[in-house]
Image (cartoon, rainbow, N blue to C red; front, side):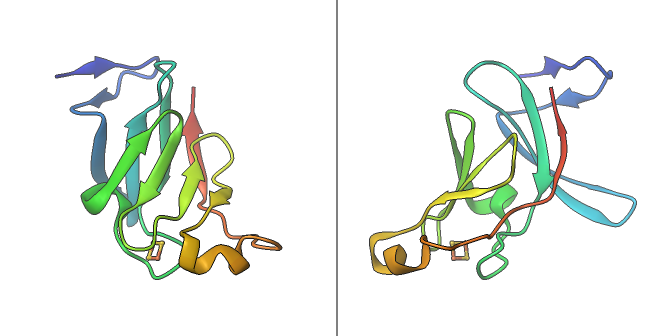
Length: 100
Ligand code: FES
C-alpha cells in the first residue's frame, strides 16, 4: 500500500527502511496518519528498527529489548521490564529527521 506525503515521498508500508545520503532511516506512519522518519538503528544495541521493529500508535518499538521511541521526538519512552531500571534518567533518543 502506498501513502502519499506532503513532500512527494511515498511510503510503501507502515514501516520501511531507506538509505539516503548515507543515513539509514526508518520511515513509518503513526496512528494519526502523520509520517515519521527517524534513525533506523535502536539507540540501545543498534538493532535495525525498520527491519525488525514494530509500529504502535506514534511509536516505533524495538523487538530486541522492547525499547519504544516516539516518532515526533525520538525520545525513548519505555523499556522492557528487565531494563526498567534504565528508564529513569534514560536520555536515549533516535534522531528525528521528519515528522509531519
Ligand atoms: S537493541 Fe533495541 S531495545 Fe535493545
